[in-house]
Length: 392
Ligand SMILES: *Cc1c(COP(=O)(O)O)cnc(C)c1O
Image (tube, rainbow, N blue to C red; front, side, top):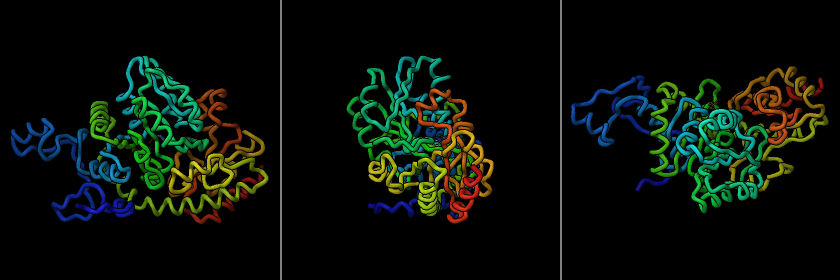
């Protein structure tokens, strides 16, 4: 029996192996279609039997390499890649919801994952409730007889709210409701939702998995075969499939995931401590600070504190704009989890399309700043923030 390999070994050696030409890495199979050996071979592949590929929307070796690696890293049955994280979100909604079905979701999830539900799926008769899942009692209170999906993101975007995954999955299992967890903020290096009972793990691989701010991509990992088939059928029919070159790039970035996250979170801890002690900063939410409201829960279900944090400035919207206009090293940009430090102001940027009322309900205050710490020298990131904060 093959010995269970460690996380870093899986990062390097996991996935599909193609030894036909002796290449050290899976090559880019940049082809739309595949030749069958003969009529029987073609027939067998269409029947879901036999070895080989049919057409790249349905499957491709370079894409399969990435899918298998992600399934191994998330302790799941299989991976389904998508053109983007939002492609993956739509596959989940499409596969699990229908007219009259209800989805229960955390209120501070990725903005587009919420707005597409409110603005599009609702038109087809899907019902939704957005609640604060950092209090598990809200989940118990809001489950309905027609709830088919519980969707959360932990830590959430941008408030850093943590959902207790073990408690959530236990409740859902008792009621036979599927759970999908957006694990983008943590990556499989820091958190494995399937280990707590989740049915689907979702990733925007645009973020820390690819890690180099040069690719947009998404992935779902299903816990079991039945869920895997359900999701794959939807992905291939919607056609939000990944491209082989995209898969190759993400697989390449993925190899250094552990090293990048270790360095970024070491920097993040220093930056969080600096901000926490700064007079222009009201509070900092970072899972590695003792003052983090859900410190114990975060330490229990995450293997580290990650590189994302949110902080509130003294001086609201105006102070937020001054900070954004005065950083020089930190890139004023959305996205996260890359090797470069990114800073953004949700009230005027990512969440500006969310109504004021919903912003407040989701904890998005006017002086809230979201920071994704990169792998530069920590002193340089701190010096840049210190200089920009002095202008407020
Ligand atoms: C970016 C992001 C998404 C959407 O992913 P895309 O790759 O941009 O489509 C979903 N969830 C979270 C938490 C994200 O940060």
